[in-house]
Image 1 (tube, rainbow, N blue to C red):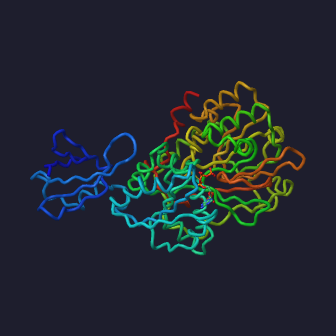
Image 2: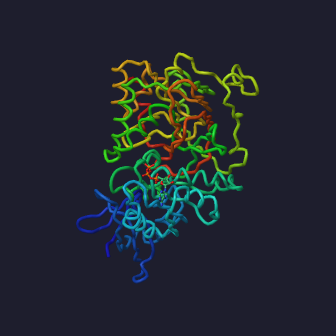
Image 3: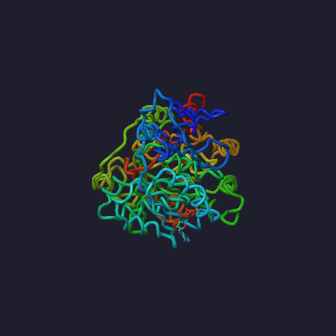
Length: 466
Ligand SMILES: Nc1ncnc2c1ncn2[C@@H]1O[C@H](COP(=O)(O)OP(=O)(O)OP(=O)(O)O)[C@@H](O)[C@H]1O
């Protein structure tokens, strides 16, 4: 047993060599039950590679011997609930099919050591996670942990939305992702965690991070009756077509996306359409000003009402009827025909990182009540395009004069019936070509963010030098 000292950030264990256990890595503390004053600490050793749970018996130095396990747990969990109740949903088909291995080897040992009560459910078919979310007892869980790609949190959120008590469900339940899929934008954007063997570290961030609320988007599609919630992206044009045409390159990994986009952009593919927005910012200066005044807003919504989840903009896919604010559709402004007839990419997003090396929405703020819009004009020259594609990891396109990037409350896109057609993709799920309209639902999704905000995409540092 080692005599130990408590500092503000760590338990300093008097071993030789000395061991410092940061409170950030402490999972649980309890009396050992064998010797008086002896404590058992469960923690994650700060090493390279996968997170490994360890245990240590310690005795506190005399001057802090009155410190109880619950005092230490308060230091270990300053921003979160100790031992939350968790429903783990894993998709055995996510990514390379290793989610069950990640669950057994990396996620469960941490949940057990942290004394969480948890249940595990395996998805057996597409939309299963939606059915689970629709039927679960909301009082039973604090967190729904998706060990998957982005598809399962998408289904969970949409399942919650279909419930009669959806306001209560969104008020109570926290939806998080441990990255086990081929697309893990949620864990990268919220927890700042990605890469191989990171599942244990993501689990630690979930237990330690702050529960916050974030904006999501309600999307109505012309040929689909139900509203679909999107926590990530809605897209039309090159992005979705590049994904469709490079499916055979899956083994190439994340660069498949860039290769596909580059091939389409350089071939000057255009998808003419009519697009309207409820603008919040227009110019790059307005974007910067808006970002700076909202990016540090610490507030989160707690109790939601049904009104918070209702659509505020009437859904209409008739270009003429909406012009000039007729029929109660005030505030819509149509994009210049010049640009919309030559549009290559329409991309709407709420999170900064859409994949490991792609920082498409660097100015996304979790609770600014806005959707970030990134457009690409198919007439832009090759060198500006190449610069932006190369700089996607830094989100450089957002600062570039030739690339429209702004914030809106709502958008609608109506494909030109005579032009080249694109699929529509919502959070990576593809639909046939059709008109669609989206509006922000402000702060309705509870999730965990390691820092209380999105993983820093470097927007404010770079905008001054761009
Ligand atoms: N048992 C299952 N068999 C087949 N598909 C499933 C099963 N369980 C869930 N799914 C579907 O798998 C889809 C993709 O899941 P997920 O996002 O976890 O993995 P991914 O590898 O990142 O996805 P993608 O293949 O879209 O890149 C989900 O949308 C879901 O509908």
